[in-house]
Length: 175
Image 1: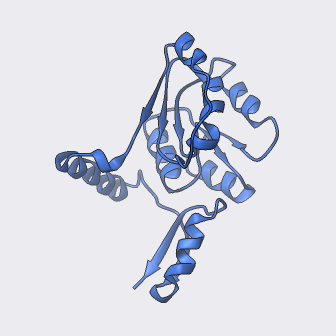
Image 2 (image 1 turned 180 degrees about the vertical axis):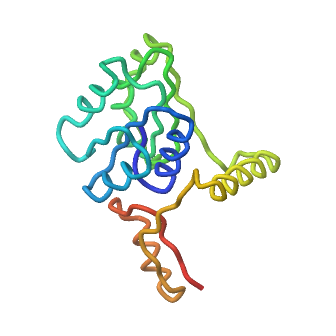
């Protein structure tokens, strides 16, 4: 399961390229359309009541093997109820506070939570990551969606657009 945004959008594209089944979540119709366009097989609106049950139905009740969590502070406790045996929940963002989490399901399922912080990559790993991104851009596997463009004089406005939960796609500053 992946959420909409620049990282979520790229994750959907990469997973789709590898032939994985992808469930994506977004908080607007525009977001749902975008994540579907990027290759998600099934989408749910995470602002609607019952969206977790709806997402779980896609797996036939088995649960997800991998969850990429972009909003861990708010959603990590929910993720634990969506996992398959031996699942991995990978925290990529949204860590602006404590999480109240009962680890029992993690234990029963043999699952794990992994924190992914790009700042810990070695120079060699960073070079590999950048090479993979450029290769994906060149071969069409990665197709960044541009949501908005701003002049350099509007940098404050562009920053606010990035912070909005409803932003979908890249916010670009033009020099």
